[in-house]
Length: 518
Image 1: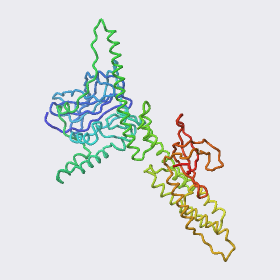
Image 2: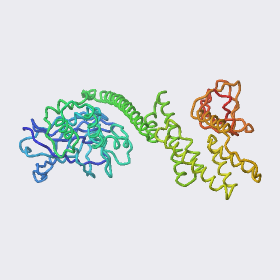
Image 3: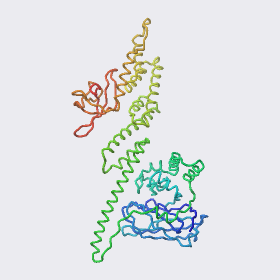
Image 4: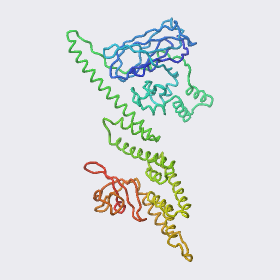
């Protein structure tokens, strides 16, 4: 048949099915029915049957809605996309422009399986061949369709339909969140438009036409030719079953089963490796977008069996980002509740590498400082004790605050000079401010850095005090990581550090003086 336009295909299915139709459409030229399937199970599929209803261009059923059955012998390996040989249709079907389709039965590992009643229906997206080519060029060959989220299921960009609670595609392993946040029709259109914008080589009229063609939601399309599908959609060679010789049937059956097991294990290992690599890439993308928890979960899922030093290092950095994000969330809750001291304590735990939260945390710390100092100044006249208590609480959390330290000195000076009318009050001590600022900067520079013990011995203590008990005596050259800092009496800087035991690889934490570090 000559070229004609086709309408969307309606697919009936159950989310529990592990062999699914990824695409089904009518073709021009040799008028035919072309079907792609996905096998997301460990078994080889050797035969498959489809039930099909045909519809006219007006979307009314032909043949009074009668179902026609199409069957084909196949050899679909586990976790494989398979393109069936197109079913050539005779002149009875030439008025057809759309189909309803489902898998009625199939054979897997020698067992005939009849599919049950279908729970759900979905219209497969109409994607013109030019747009398919653009998607492949822009996003890679693995993106076959649009990601889509429904109430009871979600469809991956590979075409496989998963149960709603499934977090990873059962066929390709892509993360649900990643697919629905990056590979829906709207987002794919946006990526295509971006590519077009950055590769303008046509005039304005042609470019506008191209953009419209490649980003619109298509309700119909020109049917592809049967020959073009055969050319573009070729199957990988799957292992073929050996012929059985009657008098050696048992022997060769055993040989075949062993061979099939080896092939299956090999194929599954390859699929698993590819899935894990895909998960790692998706995890990196999630981490860059600030989804630290999801990224870490994906890292953990991809590294259950084996982990490289490089990936381990990425995961350790990500764990710190997760802890930073959790601190930011706790701080935000405290801030909303008006608990500014606890909010400041947690905002200070947000590390600089946490690009999503760090700037916001610093802005919040500045706001908290202004709130605390204003409250101290306003309440000092009526309740000096509470005002000084609040100020001391803040300095315990943010000892590097020069403004708070200066205000405390002013209050203490005012208290000591009260009653002496002839004594001139002088609350501004520039030199002291300068010393406090330098100490605060030094403490800030130590935060979240790797340091080395430079003295012959160094005491790692339970608390930031020379009177505190010892955790361990560290030798010269010991490497450690500074988690937080605390200034004692405006001079000594205590560092809360994490140290890894060189033998056991266990970690310990404690407080150490900055004077023992490089």
